[in-house]
Image (cartoon, one colour):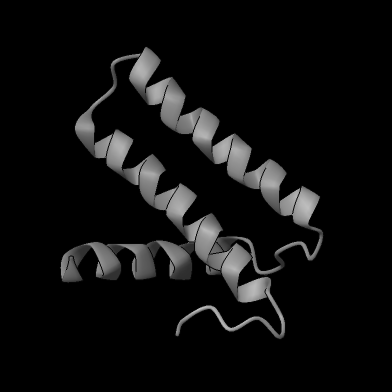
Length: 78
């Protein structure tokens, strides 16, 4: 589990360096997530490598983390 969290953290850092601004709109955030999910589906449909599949999953996880970070006044971790 520790390795997975570390990989997600790396993906978040990479996403933030690549896309410094993340939308505040939940609809825009969701659209980004759907795009990432579509990329995961593409790796499945095209029978691409496990490494690419993993990378796309981590990209989606990074989007979810960024969505969580946008929540203001909501206690996420109890």
